[in-house]
Length: 131
Image (cartoon, rainbow, N blue to C red; front, side):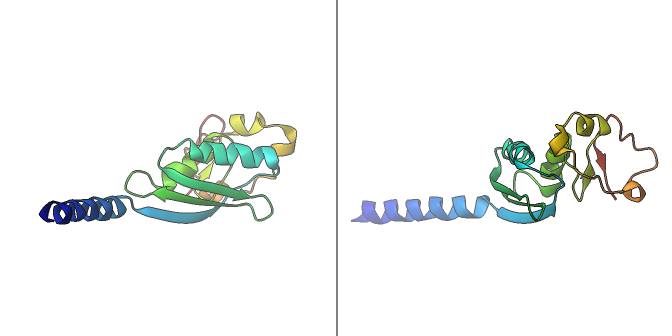
């Protein structure tokens, strides 16, 4: 009987610890794109982070919804990975080179976010963070 109680307490402790240590958060962010290939590319880039639980990009709304373990990654690094594959979003602008290499159907109308870029930003070759 005593062993059963100790086992139960141990199990409960492990269960509670695992739930508190995994801090799942969800965010929504505007991400540019056009088609099913964009959806696949965006979601694949996000899910490459093993700390992402789920990712879904809505083609019609151009909104990415991500659930992730906040103790191991953050929204900024996730959205940077999206820009690295050619998709501008509310935090980053993709490099011109990567954007230009997208298939024609994936080349969305890029928003003019030049006022949000640092003065020394090199948008031709690198992902640039927006202010």
